[in-house]
Length: 100
Image (cartoon, rainbow, N blue to C red; front, side, top):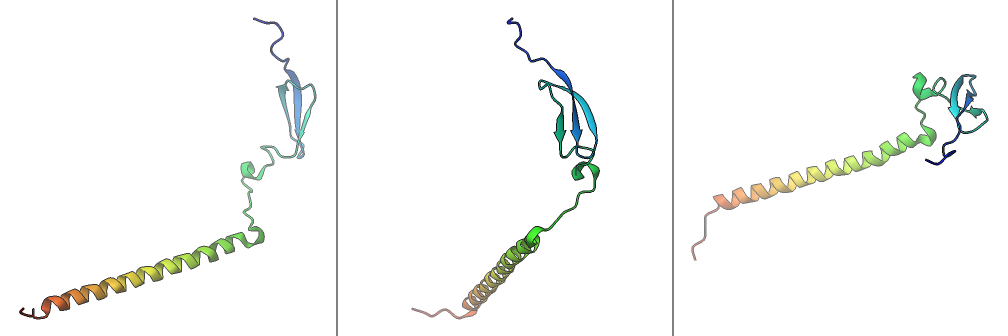
């Protein structure tokens, strides 16, 4: 095997903006500074807030509620046409047949 192919892993400290420090090893020789870590990230702490920016939820609801209304109206229209066709079929069955 070739010598010196693997990097040297030095002990470093990763420091978060909240003050939490983690000791680890890295190929870099300097300490890391991060903005968010598992100790302060809302997803991991359970303090996550769902924010509706620029009314996106309302925009989605209005967009697709109109689609749902159209689908319901279309379904009702198809049911009416089907009922009318069935009524015409029954009337045709009851009518006396003309002799040729």
